[in-house]
Length: 129
Image 1 (cartoon, rainbow, N blue to C red):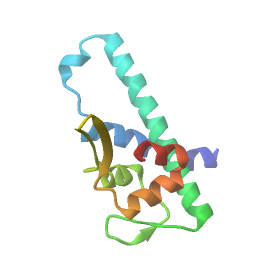
Image 2: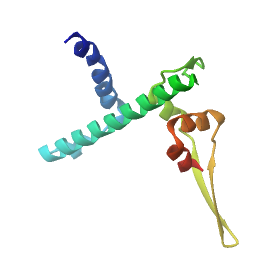
Image 3: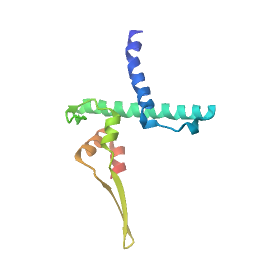
Image 4: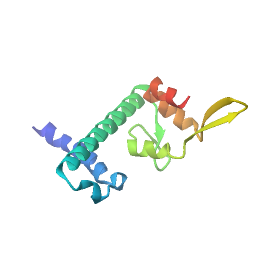
């Protein structure tokens, strides 16, 4: 019983994230019950994916004895996905065509981004290659 009580804060942190400004939605979309239920389901699904990604990265950092810089630049083995998502802001894909040839490239990628993607797995790296 105590174990479940102590684990309650993890769930509460997740719902605090869902209630943050990152998920601001106009009240116009929440006029009927089915829309509220659908939005709730989507938000819970997002929280699940967010939690799994955070767990996966933290586990891999621990296994590999690696760290990533936190908001203050100090090494950490327990970054939040919110911070990781923030680190990936500003990365853009550029597709150009010249003389019938299409070229695509990812802009603003730094070593830390490749390190995080490598820790997350090959599938994640391939998205940016």
